[in-house]
Amino acid sequence: MVKTEKELRQDIVDIGKLVYQKGWVAANDGNISIRLDADRVLCTPTGVSKGMMHVDDLIICDMYGNKLEGRRERTSEIAMHYKIYELRPDVKAVVHAHPPVSTGFAAAGRSLNLALLPEVIIGLGCVPLAEYGLPGTDALTDGMLPLIPKYDALLLANHGAVCYSDEVYKAFFKMETLEHFARITLVAELLGGPKLLPKVEVDKLFDSRTRYGVKARSSGEPGCPVVAENVAAADPGDGKITVTREELIALVDAAVRARGGK
Image 1: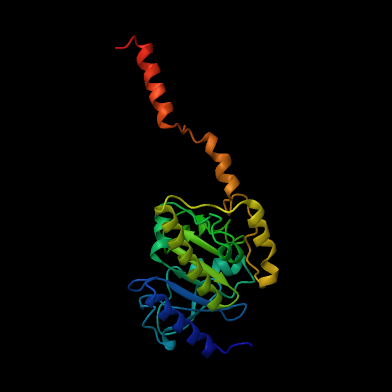
Image 2: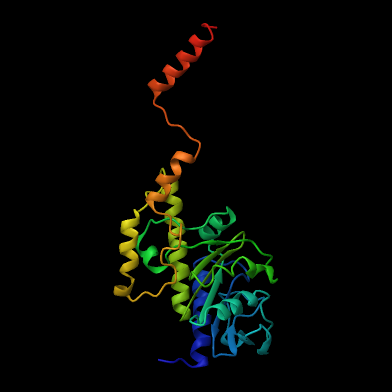
């Protein structure tokens, strides 16, 4: 069913409230947009809390980010939206926010690329990290360009996250999955380290996408997600040596004897 512009405006306002209530944005952070047609995008304005918007606050821009309609001003991050629309004709909606745990990974220079949860592998594949670019400038999208065609969700270094889909609620749900995954990954690391799924199981999950009607872009890009075999293969070359207590005592004894007991 094709929604009217009035209905799409209400969808953005409702999702703005959800994003704000979940604590994914603070003050006037974040932005949401929906592609109306080939030439126009409905989007949130700058300087307004996403939890306190009215349908009349929304503005319409062209595919170059120029404002066409609306009483408020456009966000300086509109370039991120229209670049996604340009590179992904299948995308109809974009949600950008700063969910705390996901953004924590982005601020630490960490992508969310581990093969941990079946739902995440099926729905997102994994979530790579785009290099930092100054918000409000063309540099913001530079690090995103090679990733946008391959993935449906990105972390933005030292900034936040962006998700996109063919419907605005689907983009919102991808953001929800992303933040949930970040929280679980963090807990797994605090509890001694995540246990990754092997490649054979990850391949099965990718193959099951058609059964669930999922059309996510990422389908096993090299190293994304990182599977158990990737970690095992990396261990011998990480420069670390593991020894038992008895082996360590023997090594110390041997070193002492070699120095003549001194």
